[in-house]
Image 1 (spheres, each protein chain N blue to C red):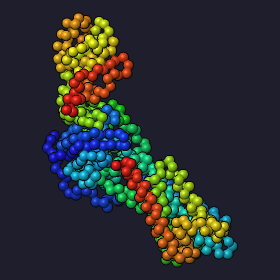
Image 2 (cartoon, each protein chain N blue to C red; image 1 turned 180 degrees about the vertical axis):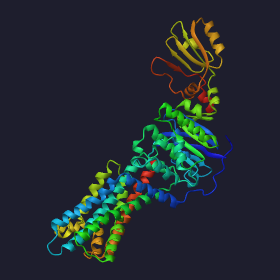
Image 3 (spheres, each protein chain N blue to C red; image 1 turned 180 degrees about the horizontal axis):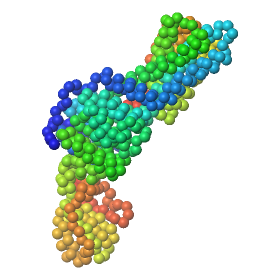
Image 4 (tube, rainbow over the protein chains, first blue to last red; image 1 turned 90 degrees about the vertical axis):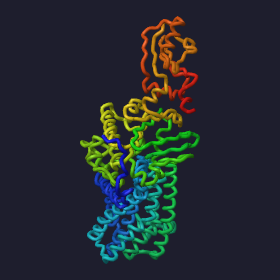
Length: 265
Length: 315
C-alpha cells in the first residue's frame, strides 16, 4: 500500500448548494413516503371538517357561497396546521434526536436544512389543498374564475408565513415532549378566535374584536377575500401578516440562536 | 501537511474546565488515538477540531482553516458519539443524502460496503441493531471520500465480532494515506489501530507518542508474587518501583529494575512464591499515566510513587 500523502482532491472545494438542497428535499420526500400517515393526517382532517361543517350548516339558498367561504377557512386551517405542527414538532424532534449535531459537522450550511424544511412544508400544504378544492367544487358547487382559484392558492400558501414563523419558534424553543402540547395550546384557540373553525359572523361581538389581533384572522381575511367574501382590505391584511411574520420569525431566530449557543458555543 | 492544529486550547463549560491547555499537531496520514478515561476531555477536543465547539482560549485550525469553514469540513468525515439521523430513512437513502454534502463523494455502494452494511442497505434506521447503527454512522463518515475521519468512540455498542471487522475496515481505509483520529477508552483498540497515542486526562495531554513510547513511559517490568505473610506498604520502602498494588499476601508492582527490587526483598527476608516478571502492557501504562486515586476501593490498594510519570510528561 502506498503511504504517500493524498493530494487534495481536484475539483470543487465544496459541493454546490443546489445539490445539497435537492438532496435534502429528496430526503424529506422519502420521509413522507416512508411515513405516509403524516401526509394523510394533514389532508384528511381539514377535508373532514369542511365536509361536516359545510353539510350541516349550509343554508338552503347560497350554499355555494357558504362552501366558498368555508374553503377559505379550512384551507387556512389546513395550511397553518401543517406549518405549526409539521414544522414545529418536526424541528423539535430533529433537535431531540440530535440530527442537527451530525449535520453541523458536515459541510451542509445550516440554512439549507431549514430551507428544505420550509419548501417541503409548502409543498405538503399545496398537496393538502388539492382535495379540499376538488371537494369544494364537486360537492359544494363552488364556482370561481381560474384567476380566483389561483389567488386563493397563492394567498393560502404565502399568507401562512406568520404561522410558519410560529412553527419555527415552537420547533427551536420547545422540547420534543412539549412541542405538540404547546402547538395545540397556541394554535387551536388562535384559529378558533380568528374564525377559521366557525364563521366569525355567528360568534359574539367581543370574540370578533379579539380575533383581529391574531395573524390567523388576517390570514383568513386574505383567503376569504380571494373568494370574494373578505371583510378587510387585502392590503391591510397583508400589512398585518408582514408585521406578524417579522415578530414571529424574530422570536424563532432568537430561539434558534439560543439553541445553537447551547450546543455549539 | 498539518491536518489539525491546536494551540493552547482551553475550554470551560460553566464551572467545569474540560480542557486546560492543549497543544496538538496532527499530520496528514497519521493514525492517532486520543486515549483517556471518561470525562478526560477527548470528545471536547474532537469537537474543537470539527468546529462544533469554540475554544475558550487558544486557536484551532483544520487544514489551516477555521474548523467551521465549509472548505475544511468538505475534507472531513465524522462519527460522533451523540448524534442522530432521520430514523425513517433507509441506509442507502441516508448515505446518498450525505454524499450530496461533499464535493467529491465516493459511490454509495462503496461507502455501504466499507461499513459492511450491504444486506441492510434498504432497511430503515429503526430496524438496525446498535452495532449496525454505529456502522451506518461510519458509512456516513466515509461517504464524502474524506481525507481525514474523526471517530468519537466508534465501537461503542458493538459486539466483539463486529468490532473486529469494523477495526479492519478502518485500517484498510487508513492504508491509502488517510488520516484517522479516534477517541477511545479501549486500550487494546488504541494499541491495535493507532501509530500514535495521545493520552488525555483531566483536560491535559499527559503523554504523546507511539504505543511503544507510551509503554516506556512507565517502568518496563511488571513484577507479581505471593508473599508468605500479609504485606504492607512499608515492606517496599525505598525500593525503585512505580506503581504498587497490595492485596493481602499478593503484590503487583512496576519497576525498571526488577532484579534490584527482588534482591532487596530477599535480603529483607521475604518469602516469595508464584513470581512472575513481565513487560508492562499498555493498560498498565495507561493506568500509571492517569492514576488519580491514592486508594482504590476494595482490598487492593494503589500507591502513588514519589515521582509520577504524569509529572514527568507535564514538566
